[in-house]
Structures are given as C-alpha cells and as structure tokens.
Image (cartoon, rainbow, N blue to C red):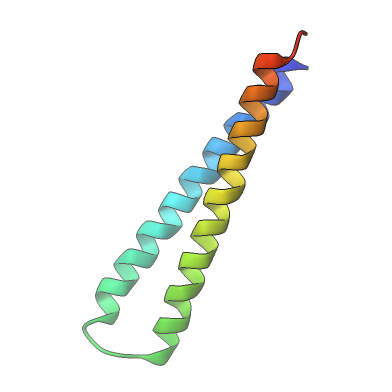
Amino acid sequence: MKNIWKLLGGLGGIIVIIGCLISFITYMYQITSTLYFDPKMLITQHGGYILSNLFFLIGYLLITVGFFTAKTSSN
C-alpha cells in the first residue's frame, strides 16, 4: 500500500512538470504576442495561465497527499 502512495506522489510530480511546460509555452506565447496585437492571443494567454495554475495545484496536492500518507503508512 505504501508503494501506491509513492506512485501517487510521483504522478503529482509529473503533473507539476506538465504545468511548468504549459507555463513556459504561455510565457513564450506572451513574448510573441507583444510583436503584434491579436485579441485571440489574449484569451489563449489567460487560458494558459489558468491551466498551468490548475496543474500546479493538483500536482502539489497529489505530492503532499501521496508522500505524507506513504510516510505515515505502516505497511
């Protein structure tokens, strides 16, 4: 049972890395959108920020629950 919680924490780590990639892509998209203004880019930019924050939130929650439960688990 302890290994399942560790895997859950590892999955949270992968989700955090995906959130980092989404954040990086959104940031690069923001740099290119300063060259010329397009209203669709603004919506995509805010959507990317919201999506990356959700990935960070879910990922850190899984890491916290997974690793601390594995640590306190007796088996």
